[in-house]
Length: 183
Image 1 (tube, rainbow, N blue to C red):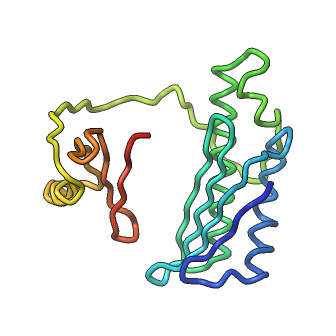
Image 2 (spheres, rainbow, N blue to C red; image 1 turned 120 degrees about the vertical axis):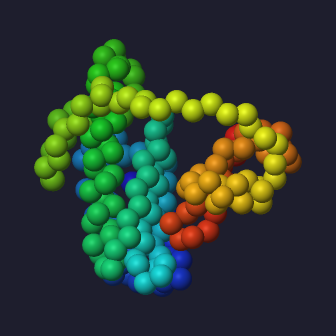
Image 3 (cartoon, rainbow, N blue to C red; image 1 turned 180 degrees about the vertical axis):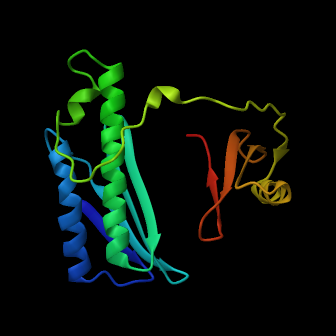
């Protein structure tokens, strides 16, 4: 598996690059064949915290994990653990839903060994506990951010006046804002 490693406000040293490659190579045991897509790793320092983000686009699923801590190497370890849990979760879901051959379940290796013990969750207990309906008011992104801050939420759904599509603004962990738009 190939990874594009970049740094934000930090220089990616050979030692960091080697450590990331070594840790992420643990994920290869979960796949029948190494994925052909390129994964993306971003190492950064935000407000004194070492941040690691990993995105691995695969056929039918995108694996993504992020972690922040006081130590870059601890953040890398935590991200790899999160990715392993995601792979096992997707494998469990696929095995339940797709019993026929040729489905997405062939993406993951059967019975791949696990290096960490994680309690198996029952994913059939996913339940919607609240349903909310509202009218989407056409507004621009700046107004949506102001509305989001007024109601005290971390995200806000609105009708984008510029594109006439439904969009979402959200507050990022670094204190800035993100925008999700439809393709």
